[in-house]
Image (cartoon, rainbow, N blue to C red; front, side, top):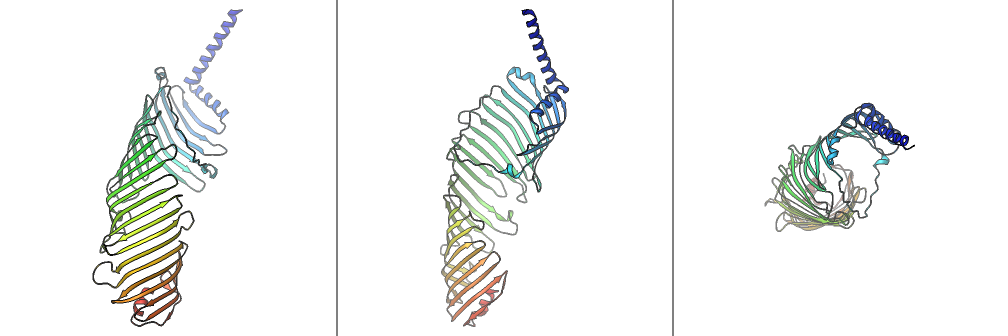
Length: 455
């Protein structure tokens, strides 16, 4: 009785071994395996399959189209690996080549839930080592309802694992507007230490290619990014991020000796010297300060100091100081709300000892002191001005009320006292042409100059 049972067990075991061998080592077994997978995953469809699961296989026209979420279409996939390496506790993948990857997103799939709760990076202990000789992904496209965009042109990856560390020998990413090369080490356990070096080349911003060399080092408690931007916008940046998995506070410093703005905007001959940016904050707050010297042809150098801070990334306290020289000072301070469609603001500008032209003895106008109050938004704003100026060495007190939007400006009231008296009301400027104008008690010596101002 026992002998027939034993024979039956052996026959079943041999049948299983032969079936597994057939599934893993033959092309017909590959197609049978795909049929089994497609039975459990109806959204997956593979038009053509060649090769075998144990060794090298190629798939063509792979489609994954779920009822909801992101659909995936791949022109071709090639996978080659060495099953015998598993005997040495190693997953050895010689080649993964993906060509023609199209991601089709819907509005529902673009909605993501955001969570501010703390999270912990898990420790990953690999049961075997991994060696990936070549991963190649070409022509990655994101297709949406209205249009499709090429996300990546080429991706190349080579890596292996040593103990619980991932060693990235090469990561190369190419887009139409630039490329990135990266290599280094990422820890999978304990503090998850990181040490990565990268170089990025950006070719779609300036006339010359911008080259950036950087390094990312640290762990989940503190991560430090330092990078150097080469010419034509030579500068240095350093970003320190603390406590990545919970509060996440950060410190940013940026410095540059010279930034030629004409490289970014050819029609703007502006040079920024001694640029120094200091900023720190969290995910919801920030304080920052910026100092620089701005230079333009035929104008004096202007020292700028800007401070900005916020507790919610929406309401900002702003203070700007511009100093053409030791005597001339312009200060702008107030609040800006960026959480509105048109950006709301409430600002006050104060100045002293200004003149036009800004330098030289041949002055047309000089303002000893003055202030402007500006409230509203970019779509609709109000302004009041109060200043004492001198024209042809004669003092003139000027007060004005203005109202405007993104297409017109209305001078509701303009009072000028000195060399007589001038009162102007209801000047509406659309573009550069006044639509209506009423002048009371004009003084001849000023009216020609006033006419030039209005027009």
